[in-house]
Image (cartoon, rainbow, N blue to C red; front, side):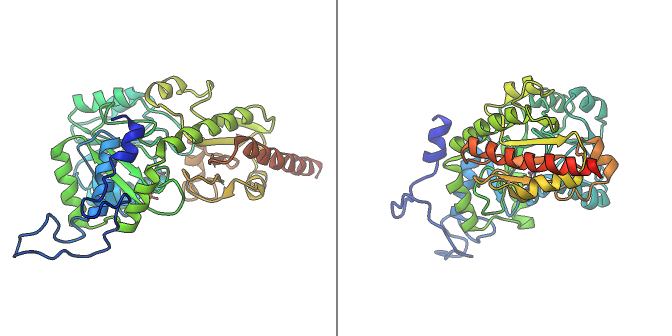
Amino acid sequence: MKDQTKLIHQIPVDPLTGSIAVPIYQTSTYVQDAPGIHKGYDYARSNNPTRKVLEDLIASLENGTSGYAFASGLAAIDAVVKLLETGDEIIAVDDIYGGAFRLFTHIYQKFGIHIKYVDTTNADHVAEAITSKTKLIWIESPTNPTLKISDIATIAKIAKANNCLLCVDNTFASPAAQKPIELGADIVVHSGTKYLGGHSDLIAGLVVTKTVELAEKIKFIQNASGAILAPFDSWLVIRGIETLNLRVKQHAENAQQVAEFLTTVDLIQHVYYPGLKSHPNHEIAKKQQKYLGGVISFDLKVDDKEVASLIVSNTKYFKLAESLGGVKSLCCLPCEMTHKSVPREKRYAAGVTDSLIRLSVGLEDAEDLIDDLKTVFALAKEKINQLERV
Ligand SMILES: *Cc1c(COP(=O)(O)O)cnc(C)c1O
C-alpha cells in the first residue's frame, strides 16, 4: 500500500457496526466474561480501541513495529528517557526543543542521567562525544527554530557501531516527509500537536519503535507511568492524519514561496529554510526528506527586538502564537516566547537573535501570505526610519 492510501485505509472500518469513522470508546473499563477472560481489553489506561487505531496507524506510517500514544509530545519523550538507567548518558542535538532540554537537564540529570549537547549537523561530533556510558543519541531534524538538518543515516550507523539507541524527534518533518526508521533510527517520537493533528486543536505525543523488544519496553512504561492519550484526542489525531500528505506537501510549497520572497527583502539578514539552496544542509535535507517543511525563520539587519515585535504583532494572517504545523499560519518571536528561558549568550550562539522571527506557514494562499508580510515590512521600515532620526 502506498502512503497516500495507507493514511486512509490503514484506519479500519469498525468491525462491530460497519461505522466508517472510528468509534470513540469513551470508557474506563471493560466487562469481563469470567475473571481474566475478556476481549483483549481490561482497563483503559492499558488499552483503548480508539487509541489502538492511532497507535497502529502511526506505526505503519513510520514503518515501525508498534506505536504508542501519549498525552503530549513531552510525555512521549519522557517515556523514551525512562528506558535509561542511572549513570547512562545521552548525546543530544545542541539546539534541541526547549521542553526536551528542560526535561533532560532539570528532571533526569538529578536522577543521574548525564546529557551532552553537541552540534549533530556534523556526524563526527557525535562519534567523538560517545563514551562507554552513552546509551541514547537524540536528534531532531529539522531543528527549531533555525532548521538545522542532521544526517540521520550516518548517525544511525555511528549509534549501531557503539551499541546506542538513536531516537529521532520527527515532529518538524512528519512521516509524510521523512521516515527515520527506514534511515536506521531505533525510535521515533512526535509531538502530535503539530503536523499530525494539523489543526491547532489538541496536545498529543507518539512513540514508534523499530523492534518488538523496544516496543514491549515502551508499552510497559506507557502503562506503568500512565501518561496516555484520551480517546477523543486520539480520534482527532486520526482524523488529522487522513490529510497529512496533502497538508505537508502544500505547507512545503507555500513555505518555499514565502522563503524565496524573504530572500529578496532588504530588511532581512538571514533566511533559514532547508528548501533554499543557500541553506548549509540543503543537500542532505533533499536526500532524506520528501518535502522540506513548513517552518521558516529569519532575522533582521537591524537586530532590534522592538522592530521584530512590531512585525509579529501586525500581521493579519500569521497569528502571533507559539506552536506550528496547523492549517492557520502562525508567527512568533522566539527571544520573548519559546526561547525566553534560554540565556542570551546561549541563544545567540544558536542563531536565535533578538530579531529572529519564526513562521509556521499554513495552508492559506501563498500570495496572500506574502502580501501580509509586505505590509508589515513597510511598517517596519517606517519604524526603522523613525529610530534612525532620533
Ligand atoms: C512541540 C514540540 C515538542 C513537545 O510537544 P508537546 O506536544 O507540546 O508536548 C517536542 N518536540 C518538538 C520538536 C516540538 O516542536
